Structure formats: structure tokens, C-alpha cells
Image 1 (cartoon, one colour):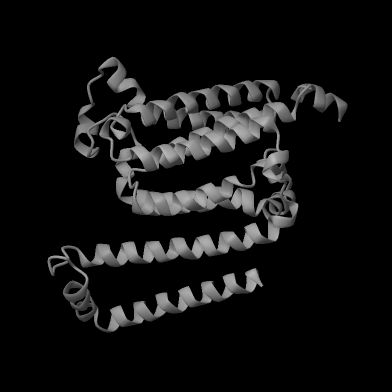
Image 2 (cartoon, one colour; image 1 turned 180 degrees about the vertical axis):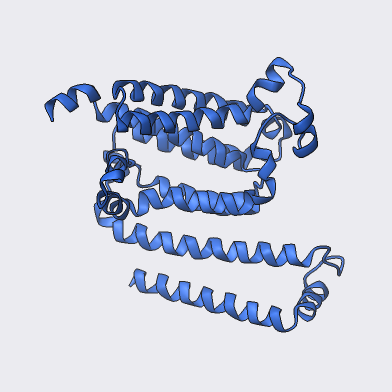
Length: 297
């Protein structure tokens, strides 16, 4: 029943999107004029195309959420009760929820959300912790495909942390290079601000991908298992115990798109996820090391 309702909602959303697209194609100025007259506070829309883009991005987000909920509904019978989960997983959920509550309560407080504010500093510390734990895991695999994969994951997390602090620029007082002064609108020594105009769609796709790892876990495993080159990913798929994380990312998809366009809350949540994912991987291989497991096999 629920699956059918989700299908009907997806079809309805697609029909609305197509109908609006046809209407805009036939009389774009007329539609914008109607919106300006009835919905705009000052009777004028400065950038109509940006408004249409934002509307369709929002509708695409709703479509992705409905699709993800189909996966969550199918997976329901395999999930565990949250009360039967290991302590470190329960702690992860509590801290994840705390980040969201913190955001809702303190979003208007500039000191918490400014550059080098409490939330950003916490994100950096968590990301560095996750990166170093992943490096430890990679070292246990030595020079193997698994080791290279975990090392690449660790490097990505550490790169994320370094980008957040502009590679230590504000900590050590380094000057911004001439090139970055010219091409970086925040005039900092980092790369991610070069892509600010793509962040909205990037955040939507990223949260959808992360949620799919939990709601479509079995399908991902089946896909990776088909090819010898990708079988290594199966071993490092997130635990079933992290299933409920998907719901957090669904919430963050809309929250980031509407209220937190800078993505500070999402970045903190991703750093926290990597930290507890790393801890979960370490616990998964206790008491044996990865090298010992290889000898057993």
C-alpha cells in the first residue's frame, strides 16, 4: 500500500513538473508576470530564471526523497530496533540528532555559524579524527587493494578538513595567493569556493547518494558484487545498524536547500558520519587485524 502511494506521488510530481515546463515554454513572461502580481511582495522578480531553477531543484529533491523512501520501505523488515543497536551506533544517532537540534536552536546566532565558529571548528576536529582513524585502518591492510581504497577514503576526509580551514590560512596568517585573489570569490586559499554556484545541486545529489547507501544497501552490494574490480567496496559498505542515518540525510537535503544554503550543518553531519563509520569498521575487525583475516582466508 505504502509503495503504491509513493509511486502515485512520484507520477503526480512528474506530471506537475512537465505541465509547468510546457506552460513556461509557451508563455514564460506571462507566467512570471502572474507570479509577480500574486506572490511577490514588491511585485517584481529580479531573476526569473533563477526562481524557476530553484523551483525545479526543489521538485527534483522531492522526487529523490520519494524514491529513497521506496527503498527505506522495502528495507524495513531487515532493520533492527534502535534500542538493540551497539552502544557506539546509539551514540552516533544521539550526536547526529544533537547537531540538527543545535542548528535549529542556534542558526540565528552568528558566533556559532561564522567562519571559524563553533560548528565549523567542531566539523574540522571531527573530520581530522575520522581521517586519522581511517589511515590507521589502511595501515592494517598494508599495500593491498583494500588498503589503497581505505587510504583514498582517508585522504578525501583529510582533504575535506584542510579545505574547511583553507589549509591553515587563518590559523597561521598566510597570505592569499594572487591567483586565488582573482578566481576565489571569498579570496581564500581553498578550492571548494571555486564551485559555489554548483553547491545547491551538489548538496542535493550528495545527500541523495548518502541516503541511498543506507536505504538501498542490498542493491549496492549486489551491484558491486558483479565485478571483480568493485568487490572490495562490498566489504566496506556501511553497517545495517546505520540504516536510520538515511532519514537524517533526507531531512538535510531539504534543510540545506531551504534554510542552510552554506551547508555548514551538512558538513558537520558528514564529518560525524565518517568518524563513526571509521569506528564501526575498526570494531568490525576486532579482535583480528585485517592482516590476520587475510592469513585465515
